[in-house]
Image (cartoon, rainbow, N blue to C red; front, side, top):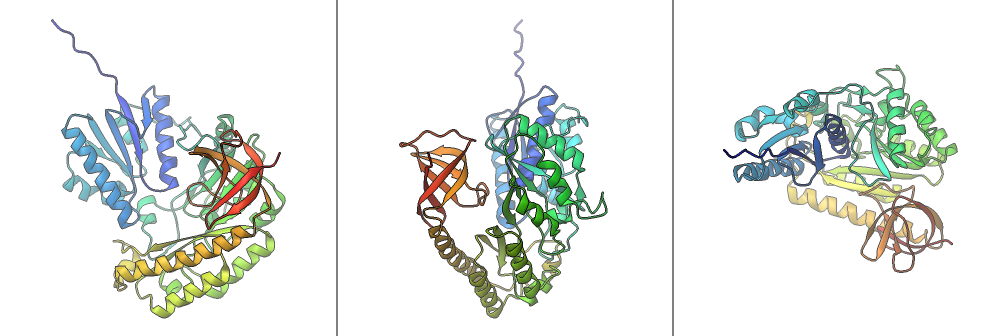
Length: 434
């Protein structure tokens, strides 16, 4: 009698969407590994977990298409089981169960213990900070809070992620220490809203105290702040940024629009005058600081006049970094009650124009850097170049520094002083200062 060979299960985790999802996948993988499971990230595996995004239309389409791709692989016998988790699953679980019923199970954003159980693993509460990082070894995301209490009209995140919930400082310090022990040198702090950190558990905005604790972690060289909200920003953070070399002079603060009429409809709780003053205060408090923002064009009711106001403001403010997106009409948001009245081609045209303006601004700012010296971290080697970043640049979204790999050998993850020799709109070319 022939014995049946037992195939060892390998779990493949696939991550779609933002840095918060990357973090969640890493926590899931850390739990699976602690349970003795073989787990990989976006490689071959007979059990698949798809961590989906449900934020805007393009992201939802990508998530649905990925699920359908793996359903076909399951049908073909290439994979045995497919589980779906994340924001799309949280937001549309009943619809997904109806439309794609042959997924083995769907889980929402807060159902990690249930997902682990389905994968034959136990949720281990003691695993504070245990993650399998998927980013290059020198940097990692540190999620300091989950959810959001802001009432922005266009955003579905509170539906998918729930109310704001801060992680205690002591837990984040433990996590940072474990990351540093594994060779991480740069922490990128993420949350739906950094400025709200601590209000729920410490009854005050406590981002500065968190930073004071994180800068003491040995091995960490840079700490970067992502996703602050423009109202209620804790200005003591800027004093700390000024005097503490580990905190990058960098802030990602999505502003979305500047026309007072649109800001009011978006329920942003601010005005053009207040926002402009805030940015002036930032730059006065931290000279040379880099501000990254994101904008939305084509929001319901955005007139040509509103758009021209935004366009002029982008020219006037000369942001160091900027991204622009077209409005996506999302169910169950406050803005869904409004008519999505800006045609898609106009939305796209407006976004393209804003990015053209930003490209010129970026080119001009980069020209000023020629001949200057910067500390850079090397993220990777690509073709004939080592690709690095300054403290003013975040991975994947900002400028990069290219250093000729045929001239010099550099180690990924290490920091070097370089001198800029040439500059384009989004790339700097540099040589190592001997």
